[in-house]
Amino acid sequence: QAKAKGRGAYQLFEPEMEEEARSRHALEQDLRGALEAREFHLVFQPQMRLDSSELTGFEALLRWKHPSRGFISPAEFIPIAEENGLIVPIGEWVLRSACATAVSWPDVTVAVNLSPVQFRSRGLVAMVTSALAEAGLPPRRLELEVTETALLDDSEATIEILHQLRALGIRVSLDDFGVGYSSLSYLRKFPFDRIKIDRSFVGTLGESPESVAIVRTIASLGSVLGVETTAEGVETEEQLDFVRECGCTAVQGYYFGKPCLASEVSRTIETLTTIRRVA
Ligand code: C2E
Ligand code: MG
Ligand code: MG
Ligand code: MG
Image 1: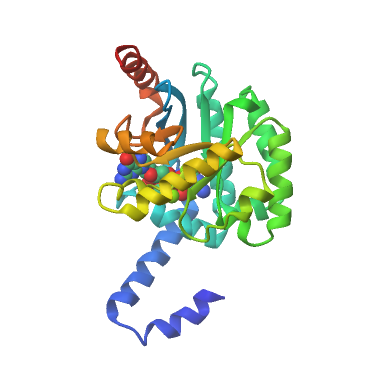
Image 2: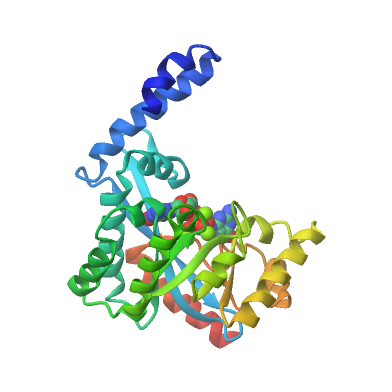
């Protein structure tokens, strides 16, 4: 319905906006065929525990290689897929692929992002159960990442689903914490296993006392609640020292590793295990 309204409305704006709307529409069309055309793949980024410098798992991140436009960022196509509902089958593909890949790893977790739209689709718990069973992955090796927007609308129903997932033995983390609609009440409504501090704070630790105060506060909140706190987007040694000093218990970022292909995961594990021995 937004589209029908949009068509007339766009003519009131600049040509660039019309162009933007057209390109988004084209992208939406292409997205419809992308799953079947096998244009998606996953990459995996290491997640480390800070005290022991131990690798604890990998986050699965979706990549779309468009046949003519090349790689398109998930930040661009996920919102479109959420709007038209395609995120439901795409998200199912992500989860099944991630579980199937992770089963061949040593005893580390795989973290998968869930869209709020997937919570509103029926049968999420059954789908997750079946993905684990089909892959033969123990539930404790799966971590599901949800953002606060998932808890915004219909939060009672969402929290009930989160409880069901956690009852299966799956870990649940709160992603991108500190931006958007952050509300501390979510931490009271559901016992998350992990809070992931948005990388916008980590990236500004050097210049912004506010960011330092926020990261420190989230870390101590996590410590009081007995929840792990992961600093996202750690790129430099300086940032690593900063987030450690702030009290974060885990990190993820380019400093330890950029997202890599499934075929490169075992080499990444080896490298990170060597770093640990040397450190
Ligand atoms: P996210 O879940 O917060 O994932 C972390 C993002 O930060 C990833 O971007 C990752 O590549 C990037 N990143 C990690 N470390 C660093 C760093 O040190 N520096 C910088 N500059 N960036 C870093 P990516 O892969 O582009 O994904 C963006 C977002 O798209 C994700 O944010 C997530 O919200 C969404 N997304 C990705 N894959 C999926 C998926 O399978 N399903 C859903 N629903 N969303 C996904
Ligand atoms: Mg995430
Ligand atoms: Mg995040
Ligand atoms: Mg994000």
